[in-house]
Length: 266
Image (cartoon, rainbow, N blue to C red; front, side):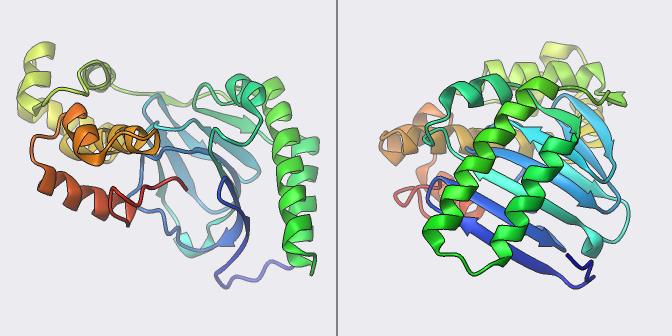
């Protein structure tokens, strides 16, 4: 494979799994939460991985393991045009429930082993060849199963560099425990015995997102999960702490790019 600096994106996908090999800016900017699992193989660039658990500078040939419904973000310190990666996005419904539950419990950054590197190289190679879509999809499923098995043996092999401020950690815990309620910044600040301005400043400094936006996006993901499971959108919105359906509809469409009745899976 050449290392052409131009942006590109190559895909293998069906309705349950997407594999992407790409360079350049991510189209998922601003989507720090989602209802699917993600495994990202970081190949090139200068970035820090920010999550609800820790900070970790990324080095080439490391793997980010991201469970569904967990906050994460890539903060670039260099030229994002140099950002090169392979990404798997996948749902629960792929027949690998035991492997997923074993491998995708926690956010982690792991060093890429030779077997993992080999799996990605082979899938990239096949994605470039003129195989039928059926063959490529079968290869994608096989590689993902082997990859999940490898990850289960190597989770958390890379140490974290920076833990979050305790105020941020406690506010995330409060939000998670009260997500179905109508939460305000003042509610969280009062529970932690800090001012709203202090809380907002510390949270934004740690997470690179406002606490208001964090709460909103987490609620939208919760509502979307209910909608996918068959709950009517109006009920899902109410159960997720939205008391204004038109506002929910607008924010849902902005985040997921479709209406609640259309559902957002991948």
